[in-house]
Image (cartoon, rainbow, N blue to C red; front, side, top):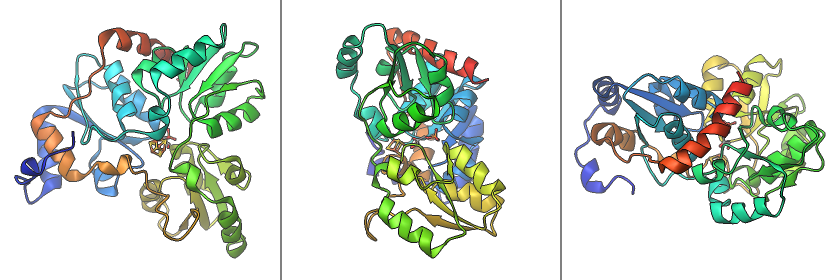
Length: 319
Ligand code: 13P
Ligand code: SF4
């Protein structure tokens, strides 16, 4: 359900101005993830990681939320704001983790482990969240798993994040759904090692969705906001970054003197640092979403009510 060419025939010359005008007219707040293109980040009221955006959505006091990110993020905003209109630039902006954990199969997986607490990464559908005891993001996953110390825990759907959390929380017994992120999965440990030889003073910052061989070379592991903060505070002048390169924009704004290198993919031709879902959102589609208040994100009320509990619990435990 992307914007049709006929709708985009009517675009104004100055899209940024038109978006800001529409935002005021609609009484809208614009939330954007760090993986959005720079022009979208610059227009947003809040730019953040998944947790920061969920918090911003929880505190929203407006008629419309325009969410520039992927579907599960906008869906979380809708779960927290049933009475507000939540629109996205492109309804097809999904996520390989959410898509790889369908609710019917996950229900069977949970049933195979009776008594286990269910902690799901926020990168899941509302229907999967509705089966969860607690939701987590990359910035609080270790803390959320520790909340269930002494009890069996299912962790889904990212297997790399799960391995890292299991180590950090000393929970080798985590019951793990074997999903992956198609972006972070691509980084090559071998080529990263070669790049580190060329830049021996560089610090390596990685997202926990990367595989173990990449994380094993990282000086810092954290969420997108954690990576940005570390890049700013680090004494290193050169940083090798293993996550989507949307984060470069905020780092370059705050420490323009630093050299930022992308962690390499398997070969030169791989555009691994770009999330194909996040990058479906464009200024043009954002303009049309605000103009027409479509595509709108909706969640069936019975699922919304059940999904709200583990999200609110996470937000209160992370306050
Ligand atoms: P963050 O919560 O760290 O921003 O991660 C979101 C995401 O989708 C990572 O790929
Ligand atoms: Fe999903 Fe990976 Fe894209 Fe993040 S980078 S939204 S986990 S596909």
